[in-house]
View 1 (cartoon, rainbow, N blue to C red):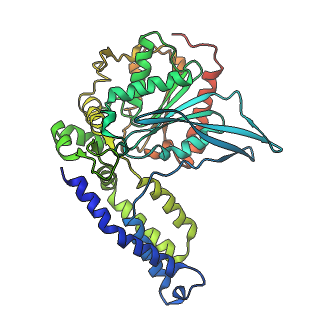
View 2 (view 1 turned 180 degrees about the vertical axis):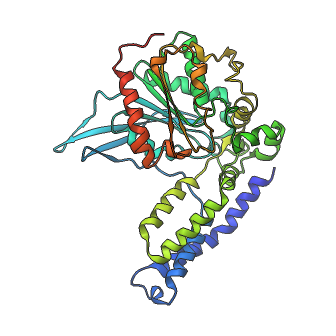
View 3 (view 1 turned 135 degrees about the vertical axis):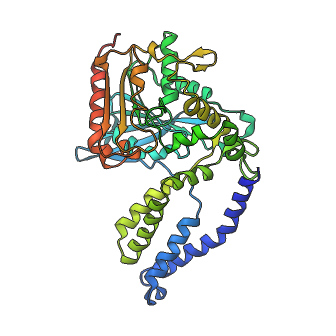
Length: 421
């Protein structure tokens, strides 16, 4: 139970070292300064910066989407908070048209709710997803709050609560014209939320786009799935759940700490990360500033992690990865049975990466068998050749290969007056 406290002690101990390394990188790397003229100064500067970046703290990044380019023209973008809940903020990115200095809000674009994963990284991991979608859509995003920043007085947060949050966000935006995109982990609670709304006779979104998610982890199990199956639930609670230390607002809250999740991420591909850091050092020595900047951008996001509420984490391990309650038709949320077959008025698009090592092939596609009430003409599946997990929603392959198909799918559903079973 002292692991989190020991981690904080280690961070405090490392702080002077990282400050010193940052100062050394600037001193030996500054153009015009006499230290930069010392033989080997470039290697000293590169070594100091590498040490600084390995030891520094990584705070939550900003989305930083202020303008986007469409058809060669720049369009202003404003980020605003639509709804604040204890564990999540619903954000809206509003795109405007700039016509000779006359700024007006874009009209007539389909609204899209991007449900970001609550699985270690911040919602800003989907920055590229959001920026690309803004070309043709009104974009809303779930911005999950770091659990260590939430006072324990706010109470626990379970997977059931996640489902209720999604329902509330859909109602807040308005389901009739809405399209929901869930990336990775939220495919499960999003499908549950829409299933429950459909079973009650509520309006449901026009379409669901599910990307690389664990709908049925019995299909093509990955290393992540195997870990959940091989260890008993008590092992996860005993080894991965810890109380938040006293130096955070969430003091005493039980969480799955972000630093443990980050260690798990790195442990999946340690050689690749080690090579990446060595390459970064070499780029700095050789003066390859573009590649060095690319490394900084990636790891500024990758190394920024959040704590997850323990109740939610353990629920997910049990319900999604161990007992497979959703695909088995046995999941109940607040006493209501989750039945995806109740969905009839919502089109379905599933997307998987050929080389995804987090959600294996078939895990997301399994949603089609569950959503038997959706007509074949309103369902599609895409397998992205050569893409890993992140490639289906971020990067060049997402922008050039995946997004055009997502955009066209949403446009077809938005053009329909209604969808009937």
